[in-house]
Length: 220
Image 1 (cartoon, helix red, strand yellow):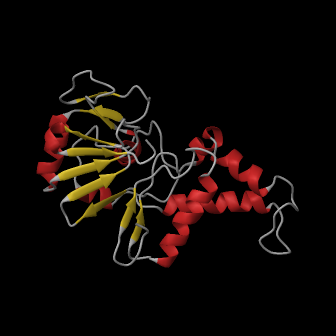
Image 2: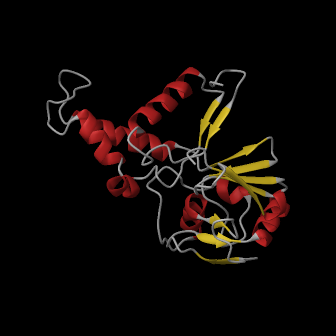
């Protein structure tokens, strides 16, 4: 059903760059967030980023829908470059989104996945998140930020190559991690389950790592 005060939702990233209705989708989510601020929550995905939007579709979509000329769309009579202003506002909103969520202290939710290093929830609470997501950063904070948005569990039905620990990702960002990493993260942080998105899965969801991790991708 629709979000309400009694029907809570956590949307887990990639609101744009997923077809021709990104503007409408993010507008709808923002309206729900304004209407039900304590019942609708949004995590940032790897596509809520300038670097991705510039070539994956959202920037082009927004500028084509709201106009490229100075006078094509105005929020106020004095506005100029209103479509660019709207795009900038979207990016500022993306920068403000949380990177992960903890449900009832037992379910950890992020868009991408787990980490190249041993990470605690306290590490995550201290991240300077209100910025463009880093890629190929050198600091531990930058690597954690990147992993939250880009990492993938393995093996899966689509990528069956075995893995227990970690290896470099074929994406060129984040890492691939096996069941031992999930088990260690859950034990270290006293959580029971990891929920993530980021990858299209045939049935819309896939249970992995002996039931400790679930991929949910509603656009499947």
